[in-house]
Every structure is written in structure tokens, then in C-alpha cells.
Image (cartoon, rainbow, N blue to C red; front, side):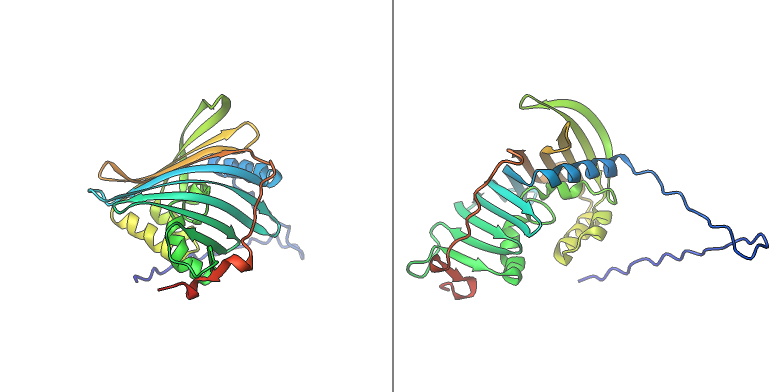
Length: 270
């Protein structure tokens, strides 16, 4: 793996003395926030008051030729002081046909049921702890975005890596929204991503000339109603994910599978 050496920025502070025993205090004015930073603050504040939502996601990834995988996912999420929980069902369509997968995500752990997968008698769910999730299940979830969670297409609304290049008023299913068009710098995005694998992916995207664009639809109160990102190579979209949000703040049922119907992933039949 290529190691990236962080740049070292040296800030030299100089002070001028007027000859007084106690120098006069100085203040450095803070720079005004850019449009995207203000937008992200609005979204964050709105989500903090509406901690549940339902989502529908459609995504695809292509090698630029004939190989293509498509995913459709539906579910709901609850965010709170004790962490994030999500229940979802997804259908993955690839060359071998369709695969139905159900998941319950609790923090960094995951309960997974795959239709047709061999399981010990009486068991329905495989349990993946944090380490197993990072190496296995994350591959199924990374289509959503860098954090590999539903709605993480919003990760590309990152003020340190993206710019607003267009804005327009646009109704979405009858609801007035503002649509924000963003361009994302893959290399800058890599520098703000914590996951080393996803960080490396974005570094390689930059090296191969892949461009990233994103669109966010936000209602008047600051809640996102839809978000979309596109990876484009040589004028062709090779990866895309679109999530629509609904029922912000409404109660959702998040049931964790019982121990009686769960088996640790490392005990699954080989």
C-alpha cells in the first residue's frame, strides 16, 4: 500500500510590542463559513431534532464494460445518544442472479440473513462483530457512501473536499426543496476519511481520473429528502447511489434478533 506523507504546515507567529509591560491582546477574526459548511450545519441541526427516518436506496457499480451490480435497499434508521441502529432489506442483482439480504445494524455490529445461505439448524441470523463487519459486511454497504451506512451519500457534502456549483428551487414529491449540486475532490476526500481502505480507494480514484459529483435536496427546515452521488470515468457514470428519505421523526421498530436464532459468523458452515 502506498503511504501518503502528510504535509507539514509551519505557522510562524510574530508579535509587535508597543513598549507596554503588558502587550495588548490581539484577536484573529474567523473566516466566514462557506455555503456548503452552512448547509451541513443546517442539516446536522435538523437531524438532531428528528432522529429517525425511513429510506429507499438504489445504486449500481460497473467496471466500465459489461460487469455491473445493482442494489435496491429499503429500511429505517434510529439515531441517538447510545448510537445508531438500522434495519434494512436489500436485493443485490449481479451476473449470478438476485440475492436477498436482510440486516440489522447496531452500532458497529451486524446481524445478517441471506436467503439460501446454509445455516445451523434453528438459526436464521449470522452475527458479525465490529472486526468481522469491517472485513466482510462493509463490502455490501459501501455502495451507500464512505461510512458504509444508509444515507452516507451525504458524506460527500464535506466542506473540506467539496464545493457548491449550482443551486435551484425544485419540488420533490410535492415538497418545496432546494437542490444543491456539488463537485467533490477525490484526493481531498481521501484526506478526511477515517477508514484506511476507503481512504485508499479515493486516492486511487483521483489517480485514475475518476470525478465525483453529488446532489442534495433539502427542505425548508434543513432535513435532506434525497441525496445522490456519481463516479464518472471518461464521461461514463461507473458508480452511483441515490437515497430518498421519508418519515423523519416518526417512530420506527428496531428489533435485534434473539440469541436463540443467532450464530456467530465464525461458526457458519463452510
